[in-house]
Image 1 (cartoon, rainbow, N blue to C red):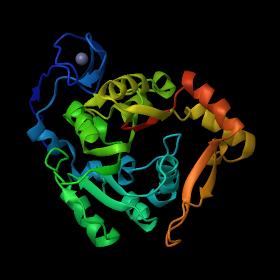
Image 2 (tube, rainbow, N blue to C red; image 1 turned 90 degrees about the vertical axis):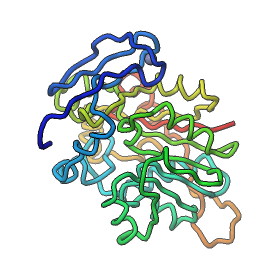
Image 3 (tube, rainbow, N blue to C red; image 1 turned 30 degrees about the vertical axis):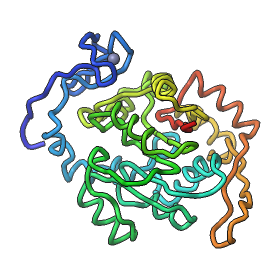
Image 4 (cartoon, rainbow, N blue to C red; image 1 turned 90 degrees about the horizontal axis):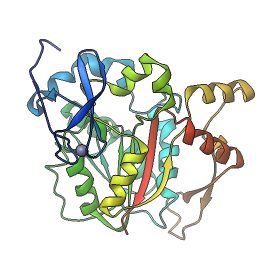
Length: 311
Ligand SMILES: [Zn+2]
């Protein structure tokens, strides 16, 4: 940030109510909760035209943002290693691969892995430098602009977004457009920081990371997203709440390492294609996974992933 920018006061992005109460504040920015629908949002917030000023070179060089993906405990892992868990979450609910769109595709790392597995990949990314890297280093062509501007003349089998929706100034529009751009039976996969996270209650540092003010304009939890998507007509199939840092640390202590395999046993399933691509990943929740899921309902981790289907 070069100099302070003026801010705009907005009405609730989901229900247009101007009635809200203070929710929290940090680093000179306020978060409010809508009295009508319960949505939590940054208010006042930067003008849309000024948003780019808050994504400086320094922001992208910050350790938290160099990589798009994180371990369940919030530590950073490399994109390629994480893609298997993400792909498994998607393929578990499909019978065949098709057209997939990633909103906020960054440098195209995840789409590159999906493409290798036989998905027809599409991506939208607002950062020109990220689009350039996606093409030059990952061989992925992205639509460089906002999702609002993107108007393909076909529908998708799946739309995914990871740590993106909280940054967008028009989340209600985006979710409706996702519904409209999916085929019947199409999947929506959304991962966002969880406002209901247990870690946020314990640590101001974790709150600072999760709020990421003023870049995070929207602050979701699993209950709000579940209710809103159901209202749009989606059938919510699964909400992964992960687990908080103390559970992660406990698991690490108990068995030296904790990972996805604690939760899911993944089995590749032959989907009778040409054999050109790997089999689809299908999973069962393990007994330990069931236990962790019941723990995570009371002690949710820092992020959540929701998977929903358009009927
Ligand atoms: Zn509202």
